[in-house]
Image 1 (cartoon, rainbow, N blue to C red):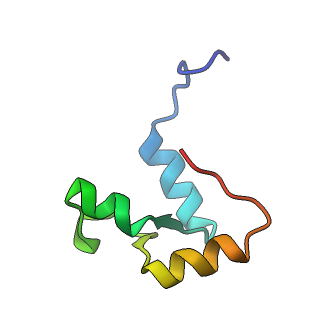
Image 2 (tube, rainbow, N blue to C red):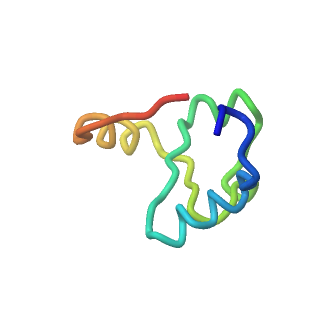
Image 3 (cartoon, rainbow, N blue to C red):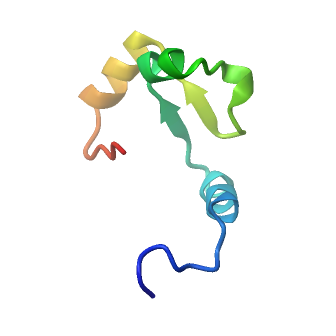
Length: 66
């Protein structure tokens, strides 16, 4: 199926992702620039501290940045 033509909604994919025990890390700088607070995020997502972000990147085998 070509890019962008999936019948599965992003919310469904996200729910499966979180149900599988995975988490989404949100950059604190990006969150601040967008005016996001932790309460604005769905379950499974967390705004990291600067230290948490450094630890995540420092210990990662792979990083996906979009």
